[in-house]
Length: 318
Length: 318
Figure 1 (cartoon, each protein chain N blue to C red):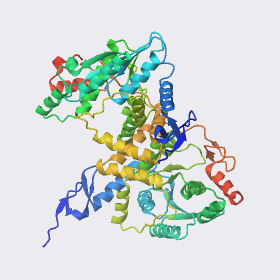
Figure 2 (tube, rainbow over the protein chains, first blue to last red):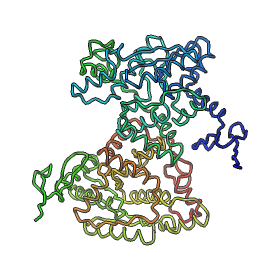
Figure 3 (cartoon, chains in turn cyan, purple):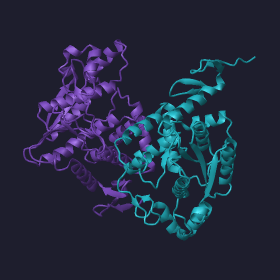
Figure 4 (cartoon, each protein chain N blue to C red):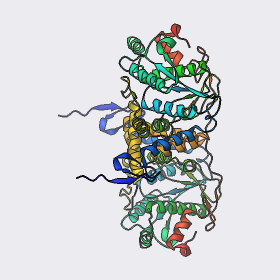
């Protein structure tokens, strides 16, 4: 006969089998599943604040179909369905990556339909006349050294922003979790890029940009996954075939190693960064891109200069 | 017959056996010994700047006898012996660490006498009535959890500052190299300690503190060592027996790993930090310690509160 050891949940005080409790190392608290879900929602609510959780607000939610975006959409939907005249709209961007993106989009659609969330699907082809697979091939033919991720990232962001404006959204919610943010902060610390540090944490004041919010910025990745798994959410698990995160994954390994030895490291990196941000200003030298008219650090923004190099200018909606 | 391969020095253009050339990975330049020494001195001169390298300046130089302090003293002495009415004074602090510190002090004295540098030796016993070995024993008897390094660091700094004031010095030069500084910056980034980040890089404006300078802050440790070895300097090599740098050495390993893969990482960390510093202010809430009267972040400064806990208050000169 095996004895299953039991412990108490640090929140509700009830006893549970140990395999049903989550030990949050940095706080030293054990959570039962119900209390964990409740506590995570509380943290996300606190992170959003009262300026966002109110009447007459429409939030565009970037949905990839992965765990982060679905957990974010799930929690935001719970909050906003109780607030009159406020709502969330799911926005999916289909980059056109064979054998990958359709699965994510499918999960996203199923999720939105299950929870009655309005959604919109935008495609790279529709906005720039070519999908990512085609772009990667064009770049190869032209002998351009191009990292697919860096292209995909900026164009996806531009499309999300554009759709959020068209849908008259007040905010654009992005599913970056604590791990993502601590990695981005650390990469900029290491590269000594103060301008990027400032831009990373502050919204532009331009009316051409919908204000971005990151509701999961205080939730570590393992907890986002746990949340999704406890609620049996059906999310897209495959990694992107273009995934080229070498430098980021190096930094991620370093942070994971530190977190393992010194629980709370990711929180302290991000908390320190937020205090630092109070002293930084978003660079004032932002001008308007000569091609698309959107704010840009350079004369021609990254997306427009990519499109020019690829010979895709004429089909672009930007 | 073996062939020794030769290459050109990237500075003077002369050919040397490869084992006589130093390859500086981040710049891609090979240096012969002579050009390396010259270039390192140039960087230190540039780092000091014209506000420091001028007439009527006295610099207190903290000398431990290790490679960093001796290289710093050597170069500063070369610069200042050519400037009328300016000089450097070596200051050694004997903490009283059995089997360790005397060797360092001996190397420091030999060095100063060889180069005709005025020097002064201060001891923990003289200033606080006990040496570090005794303090560690007292702490043990009192069941105090005390890290010898953190005590030694603050008291050494206080003594160096006190002697520099007594000797009417304009600056106090500390031998921290690029590795030391990038580690300290990274530790504060990770801990999210913005106050310490600001204090680390800026001098207090108080007339109770001699302005600290770090002439080697742009020279990586391996280059300081190479400089000392090329000039056949006789420096103290043993590590301190109390050396308890666990967390720092963890961070040091991380930075070394990054530097190995991405040459120039230490420079980019420190350069970014310096740009950041322009946005930070040294906290204005510095008050005077109720015991010693020196500026302190708390009512009683760290040294005075250590001394109180150890029962050493009455013998202290502070």
